[in-house]
Image (cartoon, rainbow, N blue to C red):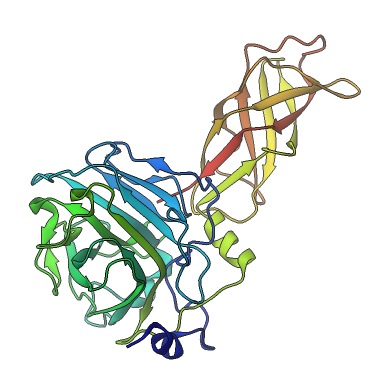
Length: 368
């Protein structure tokens, strides 16, 4: 079937909202940046590119990840994709794992009734483009990592967008979270050792992130693997990709991560001082976050003292010291900054401060 014919059947359609349990499946939102990032050993989920899409890697520097990595044309109806490029010809060992993952919040899959006799059949569909051909692997699993459904999908033509659809029966066994924790993992394998690979096509007890016999992307130097149009929905067949407007997609992503950037124009917030040392800066969150967030800064993120005008009171970037109150009130939080380098005259208790992101980034994260 040609791409045009597939799109005629699986194009944008009207219907119930929130059919797609994947957030940012079209890879439009990339708050952390669009530059290529080389993977490091992480031991967990690391978010560096398209929002809500993390990677896991047991070895460093085996692949890079980037939004729109290869500057190729996405499939019709899409403008962005997540791109993976292998950086070596690495032979995976039994304990190795390399994958792309989305963690779906339990509230967003609670109606699937997994772990009960009423568990619903679901269908995972997506567009894939790779310089390699053959059978590639992935898996679904629960938060306890003791229930997994490995799957295989085929790429027959290299460097061609291929639409894939996989129907998965509901799992009537195991424990599946239905709160703000991780309700379901969706894995796409890039190279998986035997210890993390299972037989494709059935629910199994174990922590499997791909299927036995799957192609290893990291096994070929320079190999590419691109992904977009990911949809997970109730039912035994794929329907048209559920497009949402940009602001809705951004807000969905900001429940898990909010990046404040001041690369071109400084972004400022207001606060005050306690005892002339600890600085409280208040931020209003754009949406209610999944959980109490953590904070990190890169580049020029500074505290400025107000004495009739804002004066630069620091010699470098500030360090986030804590959060108060915890969690947050009326969708507002206060960030406590500690500064030992405040030198401007007038730095006393009850001084008024501005918090400026100027050339740097403030990342507020409640990722799964």
